[in-house]
Image 1 (tube, rainbow, N blue to C red):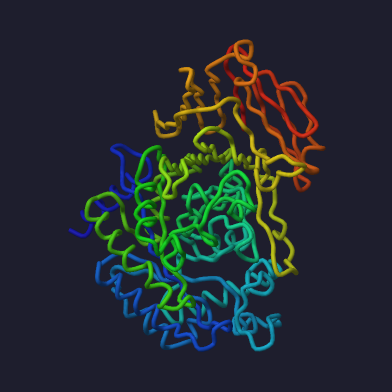
Image 2 (image 1 turned 120 degrees about the vertical axis):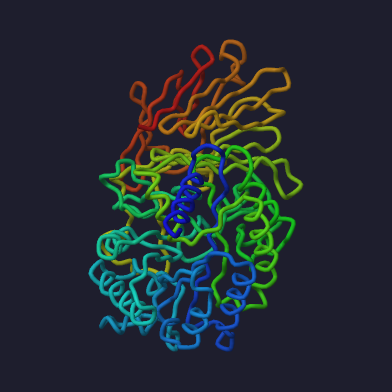
Length: 538
């Protein structure tokens, strides 16, 4: 009977990664536990964990609890964690460094006086240490976990994990899954920009946020992006001052985090679930909720009870599949031997603005096509390159902050300047914007003009195909894709026949194209030939 049930479960999980019929969105409930909070010394760190477990138990939902090293030193937190339903709960490790952890490895603690835990990159994250020190810290953390929970963990998370550490854990401990933060410019002491915007991917051995193009260069453990980002507003620091392309009246995190303004608003929470179970989704539609205990229960309870009710109801309806993080990782590995196309599509907006946002991720590139109610443009295109290494792959980060990036092609945050917004805009004005998924790897966006003509942009694993709907001879201003920005990036562009050659952070890379390309001092414009154009990434 057990074997039969397991076979059914595996079949259901496998369906969630792109087979027919269309399948539920996957939800991971991940609560991560710190053992100290020097910013708020009197805060109760046990109560949030107990209350989160009560909600999981009330709804009998699978969940994951990730324990920080200092949390595993506290009997009250370990006992609270073990009070969860054992058949519904898995345990793993959360990597933010603390004094006891690094000192147990014979390393000097570099935190502020009286602080046993730090949120700065140095000394709070693994990349602040040499590769050899990272391995010692990982081994000590896994040793303590086995002492407290009886076996080595198979899942690990952190706001930011480096490629060396993930590769080491994969090889030594046979991990099932990792989880890291979504992109959140200017929100913390680290920045991540350019990887899969959501979902899961096998990372490059040289760059933790870069999807491996060739699996021979990959860490064979999927990485999941946490927090369920808002596909419209979670781009750049946000707000009209930081990003002139769009406006948003909610400051801070634009995620499903229960303590955030969006994640605690029932109207916006319900919008998240509609978006992540809606149209245009390919591969894995992945959601994650949960909160670190250091926020305190008063903040977490503003959003988590409503979220858990919705999760339980949607699971009962078959619209989402609630799983432990490790289950989702094992299912992904079983179903996919390489990186797959995944999309995140918002065809409605929780605010009054008419914005629509389409994300497409594949092993070759990621992009965001945006509609503001009148104009269609790329906010973002990044190319994945297995030879592009993260800055601190082989050395320690000595700073309080760091950035993890992939090579940009278009980026309206990194490449804006000199009076230009850094976006790549299609000519003309549009009155409609629709999406379709003709197969498991292809996304088609159609934008209509008021004169009856249509722009059709088709995204496949390795190329973007553009049908402008008109030719340059018919409408020169309409039939164009125009990219303009500022800074050194544009001074290094080169345009040999059929190629756009770029350089970023010492890495040289290129994309191919078909069409009539006109370079300029601050970018390029791609006009159609016979109404068509193509951009190649392989």
